[in-house]
Length: 269
Ligand code: NI
Image (cartoon, rainbow, N blue to C red):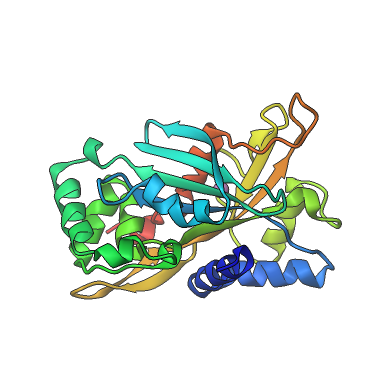
């Protein structure tokens, strides 16, 4: 499958779960903007059958290469970002939950879920939007989410894009993130304000903001629950010391962006 077809499939999966992003995308197009995607982010688990390398395999087959890794100590996550030789192709950001640092409950639940996956699922060229192929109860989900919002998210949604990101540098009618944020709020969407609406700085060569994930009804084995799904991100990049636009990520900012899928207080039970 060509790069373009893969991204179309990923985008369809993403906007089905997160119609707000489509509304924002459409509103940008109505202003005459051509939206370029800076990166697509995915979540997975560190396990002998899964992990970043396994997840990246189909992207590497399309020409993507590993560029830089990131540590998120507090959230117990590790990540790599990948780039394609075509500079207009979005970067791919894949993070994994360091399962061995979590409780016995978390480890044994995920081991059971992961063992239920077929070998053919794991090597599937469409693994990046395979979705959830396992069954768990609402109480298992809630216990995982209480220990780690990230763990809860992966258990509820499986493998699929967590967010797409608008490259603000390419917008013609909105010049910086404060203008983008004001526009998003004027459309009636809420922004993630953890650590301030704008994460990062010109000095770090990257500023980012994001919407708060909208909650969708997810079916568990006993009942359905509202679970925060995906969000839309906005990135403004600045030139690095080599004069070219910085292509990396800022761990401290990404750390706060991860919280865009935290369960709102009224859902914390
Ligand atoms: Ni991101």
